[in-house]
Image (cartoon, rainbow, N blue to C red; front, side, top):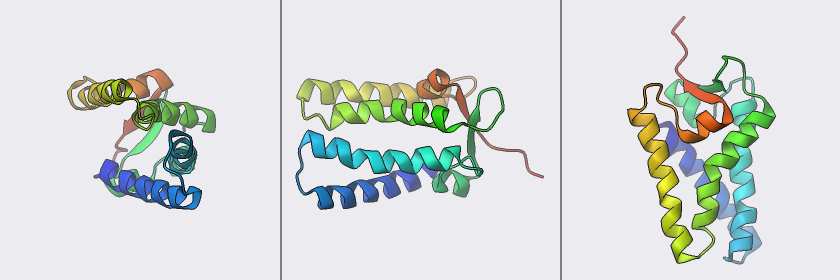
Length: 134
């Protein structure tokens, strides 16, 4: 649920930015990705530690050591998440095909891993958690 909500918001941000830029080439697609990425970075580094979609789902992002995610760590996490997307928007057919693999691996880690962490969470030192009910 969180993923679908946030993906919808990011896609809208991307589409609006693309309409302002006007050209659908890899460079403009890269520039249009920046505001969508900032949506996640700012939200996950905020006091709420979650994007709006994650808040609706009752989950949040934290550092693996239990602390609140710093802006730097949220940036690294989001950059790793968006790296395959940059391959997708490159327009190079072989790179587009290869870009799907990291997303499949991330989903497998979330669904099948012992701690349900994606590869980008492990690399960035973060975790998505459901806080205990008060």
